[in-house]
Length: 220
Length: 220
DNA sequence: GGCTAAATGTGCACTCAGTGCAAATTTGCA
DNA sequence: TGCAAATTTGCACTGAGTGCACATTTAGCC
Image (cartoon, rainbow over all chains, first blue to last red; front, side, top):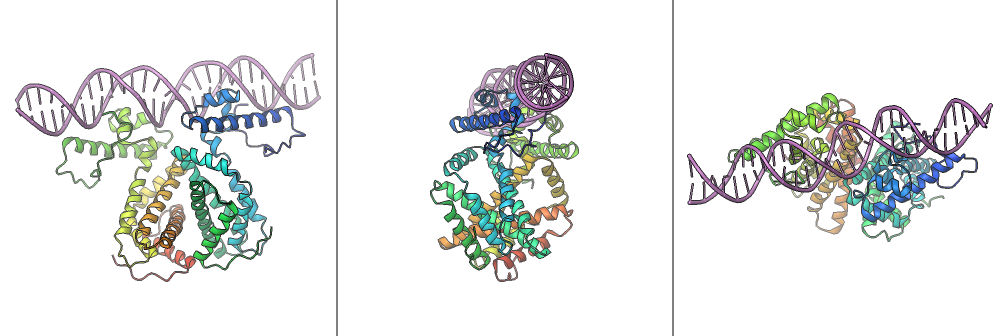
């Protein structure tokens, strides 16, 4: 098959190894995707993003350079391919919050859910890469914009009227902005603070700014 | 001179034509910059950003392709080179507000000052370009991030303590986010609303969200 | 006005990310 | 086992971007 875009019709391609019924093709694809991702990230971190070529990556992953594009749309996507996944995760996490939670509380708990999977060392390494490469920095900003949209949609789905939609957009914008700033500070300070404490503190600041009542004990 | 970056040590290169004492070199440089910018934008709008090559632009501007890079760091920069200028303009506009204005009022008036130079038709055309090109979209997000930083710094300079710095960052984040969303809506709706009305309405929303008092009559 | 040095423009060859496409290879199914 | 479909590879190419030597233009001094 001759694709202009990597195949994205395989949502089963997760890293959990749930491939009991997968054919050889699918298993090989997942293994190659993993090998490719690891090889690329290792090279990026070792010699820099710009200095690492697609030939370097393909050789290390034992595929042809042409095949790289069956797995990723671009070189940048190796670093940022998870962005759509994080927006999706945001949507899911908010949809799973109880209906009676306020928008801000739902957003807070969704983000707490998402930070459980955070690996500080990886985050620092990737942040360094992004800092060194303007195009990756720009993609980082795109990530937050996508997350904001996802959050706004998810919060709006909990609202009953048009004013709720407007408020959802505003809450999403403020919340996502605060996440972005807090994340930057967290990474700048070596990612030492526990992410959940950071998130709780951040939401306290948001509530103070928005003159919102404090959160009730979150149900998990 | 063999530069890896375009010359940026000429802040006098504005479009106002204040070149009474400029040498021939400088006058030619400005003319070429203008010609190049116009040629590029015309081609982008006529045939699309990706479909327009640097050769196309250089030919239309009557320079060599190699010389393009004396004027712009990249092809993208033709479209987005004014970003640093808009962040600078934000800094200046806020610094010029009276010291007794609140942060939000200062931000509002600064933005009103900046929107005076807005040309709706240009804005729509450029927005269309950015929509068609992911890399330009990403750079658009970078613009807002830069503007936010500039605003935060300028507002912090008006604050007397550390809490003021934190508040400045928050106000900048909320304000810039609101500008971004309002601008997107404005452009989506054909840029028909008067920009100053849009800005005033937007700030009313921000004040409502932040439970801030209404603005006093702005001094201009 | 002439000369020289500095600044700027150009041509050229190159690298690298990204793309189209045909041929080769692998996998799945009857 | 054979064949069709899926996937990989090789190759040639484009266009953005870069280094560098040489050509041209401008500025400044005598």
